[in-house]
Structure formats: structure tokens, C-alpha cells
Image (spheres, rainbow, N blue to C red):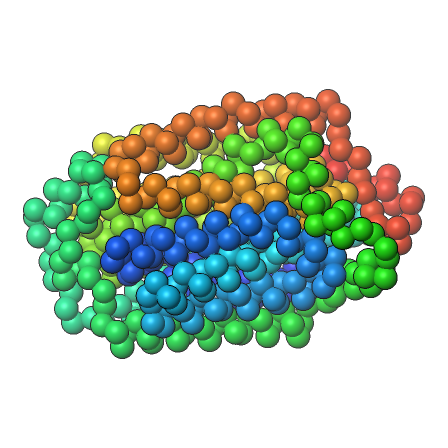
Length: 459
């Protein structure tokens, strides 16, 4: 029999899998599907700008008042609204629903991270294991299931858009502008890059809305409300409103969090590059929009499998070795993308880059989330709110300059942030090695179990 905590991890994971089957597919298509006046990229910028705003205030308030479970359900409803906005995409539908999604995004992810951290520590106490090892394992399982959403969401888009009868060959003059060879700001509009038939778009978005609603039902019905007593006590306490409202900012006094900012922002930069720039300037430009889904499926498959692997491997290798492996993979890919000139005759190469990117992203996601849970066990809500805030800032910056800066310079910026991350991250790891963060359990946990949990993964 699986433990109750493990069952809850599976429920959260399946819920996010269903929800991001829809959102992940839409995000991958925005730069190509709604390319007119940069509307698709603009909507993504609004999403992550709203996440930054919500990260400043909402997660601690919502989690402490509603609890993790109902915060997740409310956040999922905000994501579904964005799918509804894509039924009739325009400035007056995409931008408002993007803002709604952003406001619910940070509480959703903070609640998920808090839930997994609480579950991991509780299970570690029962099994006499290191808290960080169980947390790493739970995050690995979550991302293994969650990241496969890229496979299913993009499979849906490719199968549906593949029915478009207007697909034609890419003209040779357009191929000359693909990749970093040209500026990349203006992909020539041809029959392969224009918007698919409206009927096919409605079919796809309708499917996305359905799986989003299914995600809300799964979490609302099957997820245990593990922090119900804590939320009841919080609502009955007289803790000042400003104390909770400003919890995200107060945590910035911790130097470890400040040093982690480049690492966290890089996560946003690298994800936005693959979903926004690679799909548009390499895949759509040289192969057509109907290939975007297949390429992103490759990314999702490698990301999912690697997340599961690295979630378990971290206890043997430590975080630092995995982080530097991810940095090396991304560094190599960035250099290669600077010189590669995409052409339809080189079809396998289009899948090599997302596959490697998926391996690296699996490390960034699993290990960074687990690192925040280990370093800030007493301020989980505020810590994960900061994580979403700084990661979203990376998204916003990358999407904001997407329509103004040539692709070559975007790659140089990505490379610069990666180098800064490699320089600053070891400082946090060294400080944690010298002064391990003490474990923290709620007041209901037996004090004797504290000695059983060591919230520190060796370097």
C-alpha cells in the first residue's frame, strides 16, 4: 500500500498534468498562432508580469486562509480562463485573461510547492529519512508526471493542425532567414506560418478547456486538505494583515535568497527561449507550425523522464553536480544554435535541441524547487512566492524584448545570464554546507522526530 502522502503527490501531479496539457500547448503556439502585431508574445508577457505582481502579495494570503488544496483549485480556474480567451483571440480577450491567469499563477505554484514540501517532511519523519531526500523524490515524481503534459498538449495541437489542407512547402528564400542567420524579428508569412483554419483552432481550444476543467475536478475531489487545521488557526488568530501581506518582501532580507535570484531568473529565460524563440525562428520558420507540437513533445518526453531520474539521483550526486551538468548542456546548445542554419533536410536536428534542453530544464526545475524547500522550511509560502516572482521576471524580460532584439543577441543574453548563474549559485551551496539550515516541523509534530530529518543534501 502506498502512503497517504505519496497518494497526494500523485493527485497533485495528475491535476497539474491535465491543466498544463492545455496551457503548455497554448504557450508553445502563441508566438506562431497569434503572431499578428506580436499579440501572442504580448499575452505571455502580461501573464508573467501579472505573476510577478501576484507573487508579491497573494500566495501567503491565499495559502494561509484557504489552504494549499483550495488555493490550487482557484489557481487552476484562472488558467482555464486563458484557454477560453483563446477561443476568440484579440487584444480585448487575450490580455484580460492573461492578467487573470497571472494573478492565479503564483498562488497555484506556491501552494503546490508548499504542499509537496509539507508532505515530504512528514513522510521523512515517519520513515526516519532525510527530509531533503524525500522532498527531492517527491519533486522528481511531480515533474516526471507534470512535464509529460508537453507531450500530450503538443500531440493534440499537431494532430489537429496536421489536418489543415493549406500546408505547403517552405520557399527557399524564407529558409535563408531562419535561425540566427537573419535578425529573426520578421518571419515571412506563407501558407505554412499563417493561422490554421478557425474550425481547427476552436476544436483544439475546446479540448484544452475540457482538460483544464478536469484538472480542477481531480484536485477538488481527491486531494487531502493536509493543512486544514493550520488555516483554521490562522483565520482565528490576530496576526496583523500587513505581516502576511508583506511576507514575500520580508524574506528578501535573507542573503541566500538574493544570491539565488540569477539562478531563478535563468529558469524563466531558458524556458521562454525554447517556447518563444526556438519554436518560431527555427521550427515554424523552416518546417511549419504543424511541426511545433511534435518538437515540443520531444522536449516534454525528455524533460519528464529526466525529472524522475534526477529526483532520485540527487541523493547520490548532490545538487551542485546536477546544476553544473545542466549549465554545460545549455551552454553547448546556445553555442550550436548561434551557428546552425535550420533546413528541412536536417529534420532530426530539430529534435536534438529540445531533447537536450529538456534534460537541462528537468534539473533546473526539480533541483531549484527542492533547494527552496530545503533552505526556507519555516517560510515555505513566501519562499516559493519569491521563486515564482523572480522566475516570472525572467519570462517577462525575455518576452518583452522578443519583438525588438535580433535572435543572435537574445542568445548572447541567455548565455550571459547562464554564466552569472554558474558564478553565484556555488556561493549559496557553500554557505549551506558550512551552516546547514535547521529542520522545521509544525507544532503538532513530535519534537523527537526533528532529529530524524536533516534538511540538507550534500554537495
